[in-house]
Image (tube, rainbow, N blue to C red):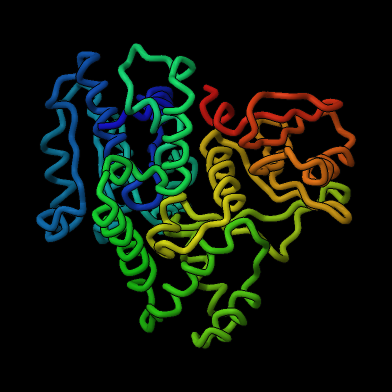
Length: 404
């Protein structure tokens, strides 16, 4: 199993707090592994195995049991007088799972952890039921730092790795992404089959199955379109017009509904716009980014990618992974790729493959120069080195991704 230290540390901070820990994220991003890693840490710290209870509800034998049977089985296995750690994996597969969560939560000897692969787990109804009693830990596929670390011994520092090796791994990460199991697949055909399986499972189980008259061709067409234009502003009407012109007839309202489903399944993330000068959020036109760079391979195959779009996707996901709220910055006559906010601090990011061309450099730096506040302004590129131009930093994107 690949170590996921940032998530394990989060769970450790939340351990034994009187609150339900809910791990969410796209299918196969590593939620189950994180629970297994955390249970191993508990064992290493002296928690006895009989106090750790794990159920994976993708197991058909569990799906055939009703929620009351599951609850009774868990309750009878609890060790009295000591804290029991209960891990319920893909709990949304079980009908009335919320009743189990509610009942387990009120027991004073249970520390409860659950995972889910679609936002139904935190739907408005469940959020109301568990109001103030849960905290979400959102999980993404492997970061570049996690991927690189997984190939090295524990004693090896990322800063000591050979630059050529790091660049090769970055190229693979750029094109093949960070789904944990897929990252270890060397054979091209096996990799594509695995990634296609992830996409198909999400489209069928998490999207189409929730609709009486789901349109599989439309959903597939939308997914391909969105991953192809990642980094471009889109809206439901534009998407509907594009798909209709390609022979997939639809409406803006239908597209808007499916966009919500894409977000609920964590297959894509929306990045809304923020007017920097007017200091207001804008509801018209957003960018959509896939949950992992490897989804492009699964949906578009060998179609030549736009490198700028790939870099933007990686940076967006990394900012989300680091806990930032991320927006597209708009200015009169210009745009800032990302405004990242966390704990009252704002950072501005531009992303460009290279700034060696003077015109490109001037274009990328122009929008940042217009912003007069004192927050960090950063341009991430594949160029080597780090520079500072009147307070605007230029940083190599690989160095930034590997920074801990």
